[in-house]
Image (cartoon, helix red, strand yellow):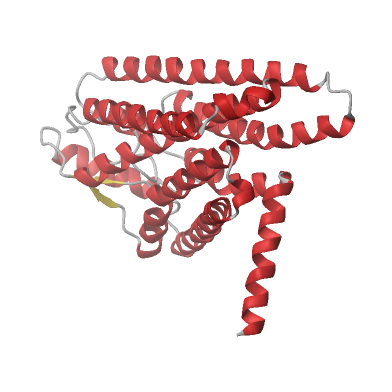
Length: 328
């Protein structure tokens, strides 16, 4: 196995420090072969760079194009900002660590990474839920849309997502790092996450696992149920439209959102609810990449490919940029 070397390190550490608290953690490597480490480092850097530029492009377009100053694009702009931050939490550090062959992360750095991953993941899912509400009101109650989804209401919804996300992340981070980690300091993941940390704790983690499962089910299931209910009503309304062109236009604003929600939920659920494993594997890393890196990387691509207004705004921006260069 390519992780045999990491297991040997862990066995040595277990013998030497059964009764001492750890001061740092060792993250999982993408590979123990140097050439593959460099390859994965540059691959992750390319994905990160493309995802960051794509999300920042949507932020710029939805900010400066007045035609896109609507609730739908307000939430899309916020989602893109969250995605840019979400990508920046794990991908750059993992890329650098793989390039310089460094696995060490301090306990403080690990706690910060856990907090930010949970916070950004929560806010992203909350925003996706709010965006489902926006599409429901726009399609099912178009005459009241500007009143129900006023700028003040949109700002309140966004602040609610951020504040509840801070409380959610603070609770789970604090509840995790009250535990003792004297069994091992090897985290079987390429970044710090709660399931991996619970597996190496020498404290009783039953209450942690229970609170994590219950909170995830309550928040995730309620949000997912709300999204499903919203789209059931949306589709039933859209299918009643007499004009086929109106149906296509309505579906074009919904399909990207459904795609993003499905990708985020499926990948996240598989990572957090898979059976516990005492040893890491390359499959675990790939699944975590699909959860933390791929969704925010694909979001701008999905929205720009399926949304005519976004594509039109990108073309207009490129035209203006080229004309300015020619004048210069």
